[in-house]
Length: 275
Image (cartoon, rainbow, N blue to C red; front, side, top):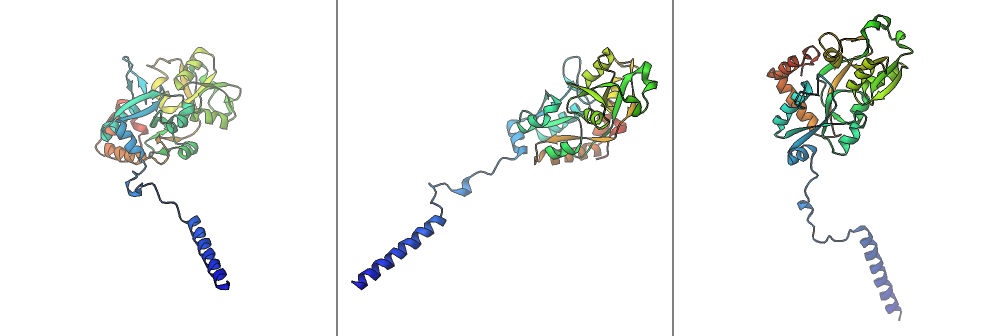
């Protein structure tokens, strides 16, 4: 009897150890071979696979703006088209609300933000960005007949500024404790000053040089105070290989002179950063 009890006890212990081992051993798969599972698709492969690079822009001369036929032209627009040819994909331009650029990018309604975008800390934290390609600054726009009154930051107190929502111009207005109203884009900010619904605007210096003063549609406006200095870059989804591809393209385009020729066409050659 004692022998039988000892045997039963031994068998019980064997089953107990087997059960414990089962807890740590994953159940066999239903036949899936892990070596056959495809790797996650890269962002570069995603863009090449669909054959288009959707570029988020706003109406911002001389970087991106429509010609008389509604086609997008400008320094950024032409360089984007050349980059598309480099990748072997078509470029599709899509106007966006600048304040929502990160959401548009992460949601894949666009693949790039390429519109004279200032490389702020917030932008670099939210996107995979290219190397800087143009220098820029934020400048104050006022009516020419009162420009002599607004030549320093201190003199700007009390003015109401039109600024593009989510822009570097808005950041400068906040940083300098200036009263501002948000508008759709920088072109609208100029209209607000021209019509008198805003006292002033803060826009990119490159845009001011192309859009304001003699020979433009805004001969009655001028720019006065420079508020900062900054650099432009292009943004892609975080971790995207497209940023490195663009850096390689920029280097090649700068080396062969095509980048400089495009910059001269749109009057931004003095701001171009060597690649």
